[in-house]
Image (tube, rainbow, N blue to C red; front, side):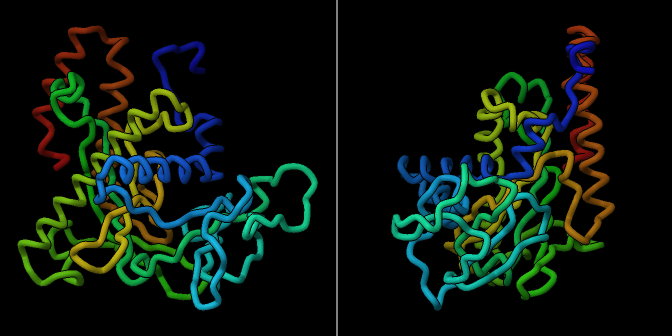
Length: 308
């Protein structure tokens, strides 16, 4: 289809679909962002829960297990909260990474990425506080396309929490979520000024991460759909005003309206409106000609208020 219509892009393509399903590529990319931020002295961008791919690269990244500590184990090829377990660090079922540099029983060939799990440091706030689902669309206004404005626009922010605290967890979006505002941080601080500052910090963090992902997508086809938009699932390292935001997962634009067992008409309508507009402006403008592109941008600015 795309070979017959060079100006047509279809998502997901097979490479990105497999990359997203196995998760390891996204996890490695997020680790790289946090590491580079730490090296550059950007402390507010540097937090990332310790994560190990479960054996694809050898030695365990979480270090020696401690009986008292917990970790989260998730099957490589799974969706949402399916296949997620919170277990003791000593429970290594389904993991093939080496402990203390000592290989486990040899396996034939390289570990199959579809046949095991990855594991991650347990972050208590993901259970007690939840995470923010930040939907970001590509900004196709003239100013953004010319580099004068940020390339992304936040269409919605929704906080979700686990359905239960047991091993197998699912996430649900509220059927009637409140508009995002400073009160989402009431569990952290009662100071209205600090709550508002945390809201601004979340928006700034999400948009900056989007810029980094968008830049990387120019060279990594497995991230190509972020040129349309993305949903960033953002966690908080600690339930305090000093807690740092981090990306728990990158959700592609074509799955961004999925919230586990929940469904939200308001959020999905805003996201559908955003994607419909981008589909006609970004990928249709070359066929329509330069003059139509300018007209579309003018109309885009007039319609901006509908997506705020």
